[in-house]
Image 1: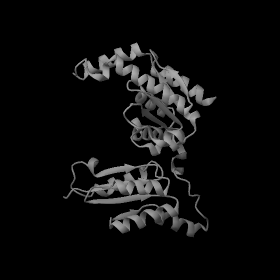
Image 2: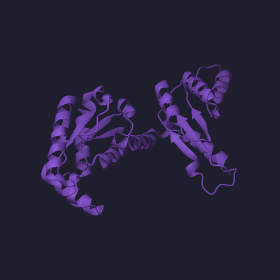
Image 3: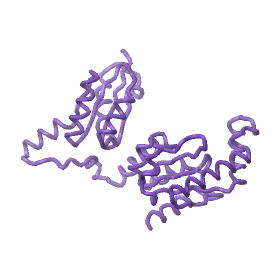
Image 4: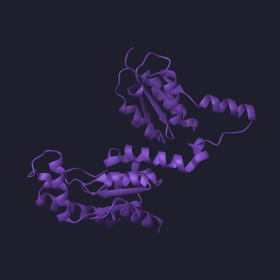
Length: 268
């Protein structure tokens, strides 16, 4: 069997499309379906669709999509037709059939199927969101985030994101590196949902030294030098001042303690 990549594109978490894809793949002699399916979640605008289309590089691909908004379904279909990429609109024909049968217009609200257990699926959605937008890999997530964590390396941004996601918050974390330009989107969002993660330089020095040892790297690497740490922390302070957001000192704090403080601030 030739290699095939099925992209599941959805305005929600894409669970429905993935289940359909795996059910279809099960009809073929495949040892594992894992590497055949890639889920692309939370595609809410035409711009999101354009970004997905431009990212496709595999030669033998197909797309399954589930959009409740007709304009998004039509838009992605037109783009895929242009590229001659095979696709299946999983949910629109069913919605149209039901709408005609009951003589009622659909609500067109993504994710309503999960409202039967909204808390559980809210957590799953938030966890997937945190993984997708970890370390600022995709700045488009900033506009959809409930919380944006900003800090230098080793300030527990990723574990904090996961902990907060389990509480149902959509979190993006941004790693501050002086040599890397910050995404413009960071300065366009509401600063009240941004939290800077502050840490004492001497504690960060010890943490990075331990990290270098764990990785089997030289302790004199720039990453673990005091001069570099001071430079990064000064860059952190400058960035926080530009954004105008609040900070939390995470020095010697447990993840749970920091997360509780962040939630308290957000609830204010």
